[in-house]
Image (cartoon, rainbow, N blue to C red):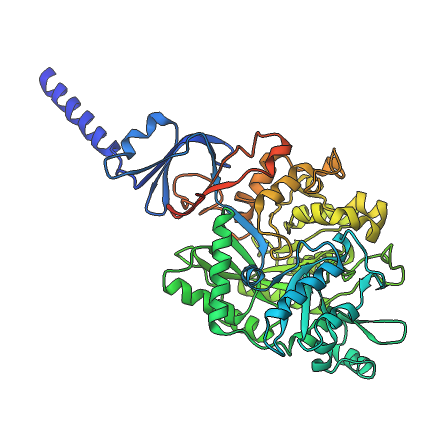
Length: 569
């Protein structure tokens, strides 16, 4: 009897050992600090990956069963790894085109911008359009001699390019600057402006000088008067822009991207690249609200959640006001530096309510652009009506994109309603020094870039850059999140320091909380068995280095689905 028992015990022990034996992993990563963004297991010593999925995240002692002679091993050599970063609000094709067209992000004066145009004209064919983006008049160190309502006039630009039409988009994308040739082609002149303004309706403005002549500045919808005359890109250019966008994401540790406002043509291009195995950034697509035909086509067929986790289409982007830089953000009270003007809505609030209802009905997330405090309040009001009419729709995760300037009374509403503020911390670094001129001290201190107050309301913040409005670099946005300083490190203690994020909050906003903002927290955003093997490796520890060293931190490696797609040489 005793021998039989021992035999069964031995067999049982062997069976247990066999059952516990794991299949060797394809990839093991160890040798550095690994932040998981998992509350119960915040750091681990090693990660094992099979295919595109994490199978182990833990200490070194448990790693041996996942390794054999075929397993690839990455030694971090003391570097730091986190989940792959998720760009929570950007414009994917805009990122690609920013690398193709004239980059004006770093110009420091109107004259410097004109010089860049001159250089482009010298290389261009006669009559060829010169296209650029990135200028921002409030970031110039030298102001133009003549300004109309805070903006330069076209004359210097027109003299530099008399025969080539020029259109230069503001960094925000909410205004554009044209030369005389471009306005001539568009039929914009002193006699036509009044009629053109009537045709535009609400949501657009052509800036005029004291004599009623167009200055060259086109605000919001008025830009279309010029842009409709710019020739379409070739298919080759379109594909090249996509390739450049993916490469830029990988260089910057971005493995997923929330694309805010996508056209039918872009969706077709994304599908083409996915079918060819060339799509190497995970895209979460918001359909552009500018195309109602596209929206209702998708309402009829429903959301498309990709089982391959590369191209999901289940959200809608509504553009509801403008930008602070162009004074298009819709405010409750007038601008401090333009007291006769409070900005403007760029979409009817009746439309916002209608689409909010339709989103709940058909299973689409609604993401509304709102920068000004009035735009935010009006959208929260419409969301609240839609939610109250559909109490069963509890997991809507509707978003407000930017949520930059809020009335204090509206801050708690985000958490209460479950509305996600998709904010770009880098905007504080770029905008705060001059935003106080637009809003005044009281509005800035009570309602601008209110990250900690929103988090305390129970809201989930999604971080990002709004690229190409700002560079795609998430390290700069992380720095802004935790310091509330400009990229020059000013002021010493940060603007409104009580609203800083902790480093843990900032990391979550770029990983797990960003995944939540796209209904994807169960598949990405943290390092946990069963989730996608998307990682970014940094040469420094973002969670512990002094504030002064954050901006010098670099991406060493980007891993998507267990494959190394970028490695800094």
